[in-house]
Length: 261
Image (tube, rainbow, N blue to C red; front, side):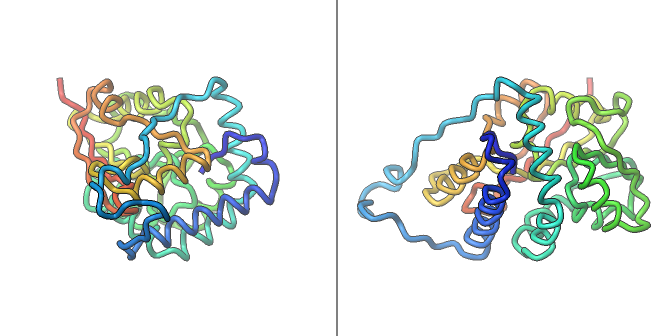
């Protein structure tokens, strides 16, 4: 997860963020019960347990936000790789995307260390792009000879022609982009008509869920930007479905289709 604060350059701050990352995945995985905080009236309506849901505002300086994000992943790419491989809950979330990927041409944007890519790259003609050079190197090593064409680049300037891909995959990354409309616009641009965007990310639960809301607030404290995805998908001309797949409703699988004109 990216950080907006300048202390992203501090190793201690980065380690603390990974502890939060680890705790979130464990707590929100196989366990579905939680203890309400002291002072909450359990006899009251569940709606009274929810927090105010405030969507994030875009950072004023997109470049500075992205640089801090990039520095963080450069510093902790190795630890990130270990965590993704070690956490079954995290892998379970990512694998939810697999049944929705269709070929023959697939693009994964912000593939990280390449875990999800490794699950499908051999079956399609696959391209991948990630902002961070260390992530590109790590994913290339993890994929070995899977045949994916990986490169470094930005989601807001994808180096691919219009209508190039049957599926674009984006997992646990969209909330780290400083310009949501530009990022979604580029991913939509490279989709073929009737192509699909398969996205997994954190957002508020669709129904009342105190623990899910709390987890979203934790992600926001870590620097993630939580957006109104209904508005974004509609403005991009995408028809979509939204399925909650974990985190007490805070982890969403979005299947969005580019409308054919």
